[in-house]
Amino acid sequence: MTDEKQQEKLVTDRTSIETDWLCGMRYWWYKHAEGNGIVPAAEATELLEGRDIHADLADYAAGVPLEKLLADIEEKVKQAAEVPDLELLYRRMGWLIAWDAWVEPRLRAEFPRNLMLEKELVLDRDPLWIATTPDRVVASNSGLIVVDDYKTARSLYGWAEKWPYAIQCHIQLKAVEEELGKKVAYGRMRAIYKGDHRDGRLTHPYVWVWKDRGGAYTPEYKTGLTRVPVWEYPGGIREWVKFCGEEIGLAQFPLSQPIFCNDRLLEDMIQARVNREKAIKLGIERARTDPAFRKLLFEQRFGQCRSSKRYPCPYLSACHNATVNQNPLGSGEYVKRTPHHELELIELED
Image (cartoon, rainbow, N blue to C red; front, side, top):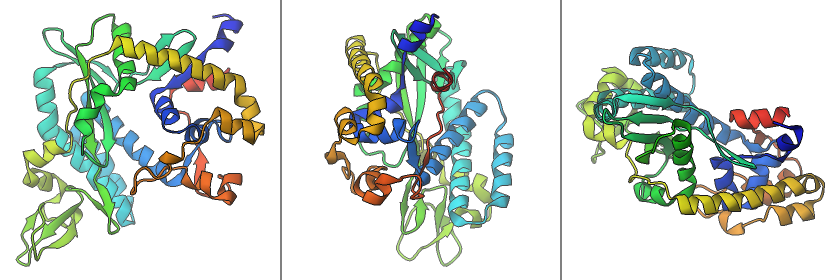
């Protein structure tokens, strides 16, 4: 590739595209502030949680025994001193045990061949390069290819129905097709249900359980029961997941409706993204030093600040608090974002 061609490339990924669609200023904070972007210090922990379970499932699909994965987490349990840390570790073990018992057997029965596991791909639409990493690409014995992608989710309300219309997900289907040189039948998103934080606890069936006065345990609340942590259950997390059963186990990993690639809308989106990335590339240096121009290039959409009552924009303080706005890293609320796509790392080295 010539130096001139190297300079023309525009590099992005699905998360960046979705962030920019929500709010230009949110995209500024995420991708460009302080050099390569910033993320909330608290959210950085959530990102690590997501990466941990994605890595666990990739290792499991590649043949790492369940007991080895659980043993590694149990070592972390021994070192955990705080309840919030234990909650995350036990939820992670519960996910793996349920996956092994009820999800993987069904998946392998229908699609016994793994074609890709966490393989970073690039959808090349010169000059735009879009990085995408399908979690798992599987095939049936008859050659049917399906992209199985995972996404952690706090809420499952309306979750399954929205993904066929999320055109950004079609990037991945097209990238897999072009990498394999074969048609993908469909894609699907698989939720990994995280539960929610309420009353200072992580409410999840594999974290907190209910106990009656006679010492009997149940995953379902009834009047008069007391809530206790799962690590107090006499049989341990393995027995608790089995006790909860198949219905609760499968409910941790619901599937979306099938996603069929819409070539027409995908190409429309890509062209719009080329135009947007060109505009950013031309104006980014001025935006770093000229706040007025920055607000033009990265339009602030105030309707997104608290579009969710329970989960406001992660950059709410960075925009609305004047002190944090001037020094987000110094506030302690934010840390520098660590680029995680190989393509982005290569771009930064150029």
